[in-house]
Image (tube, rainbow, N blue to C red; front, side, top):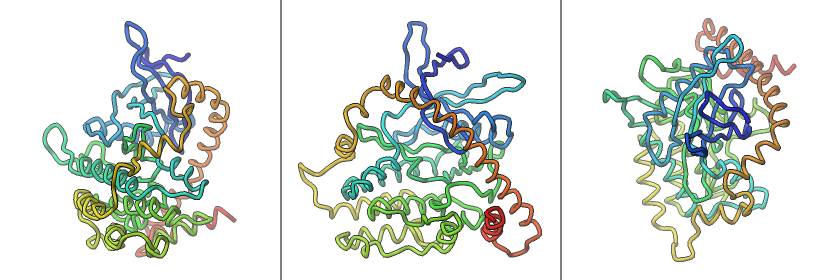
Length: 375
């Protein structure tokens, strides 16, 4: 068993993303045992990249001042020396559950959708967390101006008990000078971007509202909104932001609910809800018309229905599963590093061309570089 920084027992690799890996761990105490936590570290191949290290530090800096039931809490930030360098790691609370992407994927496989009251339960929790993050201030009382910029279902964690928490502020934009990400940097998952983010314009909190609108549309419709067979097609759809009428997908959806989703997905920023609080109020008002009673399903009910007793078991089972997947995860780690390298190359070329491209959209430049890379 690995001991990280003398404080955390690493029990297994849980997941590997594009730039980071997530471990399940337990905080050590003098009496033994301790709290189950999650440790986030950059991929070994990327750990010496200054920009990525800065992103990890920025995430820890941002979330350390965010204490809200709908936001994953950062518990610690540490360093570990390996070889000739020092790597950073972030320790976060462990959410015993799955992400929203996993839940929606299970339902899609069974040709099912989330019950409408559960959609509203999730969306209102996200809106509540975003409202808190958008309005957060530092310890001197200065507005942080936080914008998440990556509000995808992978970054919404759902516990088996029905809690909803926003995670991964790693590419967030915020206002304090010492940790601000560069204005217009092209980051995030294409299919959950706002049109202005995809166009490489400066974004504010209303970009997150558009992304929440995408999540709402997809939870209700039971299908993806902007995803296509190729990245090129996806980028085109995001850029145009043409949203099919939700009631054509589900005619039984009340008009008031469809209107909330439509407003959240307005292409023009000033036509959207102007705050997360505003969409939260609109959701509450529209959701009041939904029939409710003693048998109305909750998110906790859905989680119990969709996940077996073994899957919902306590962390020791999760640790065993994590250990079983370490070999596969290691292979994914190598592949992820290669994918990140290619992505950085494409975006780097587009960045350089953008300096002398005049009015040409950055998205157009990325598209051209993607075409070049593919053949």
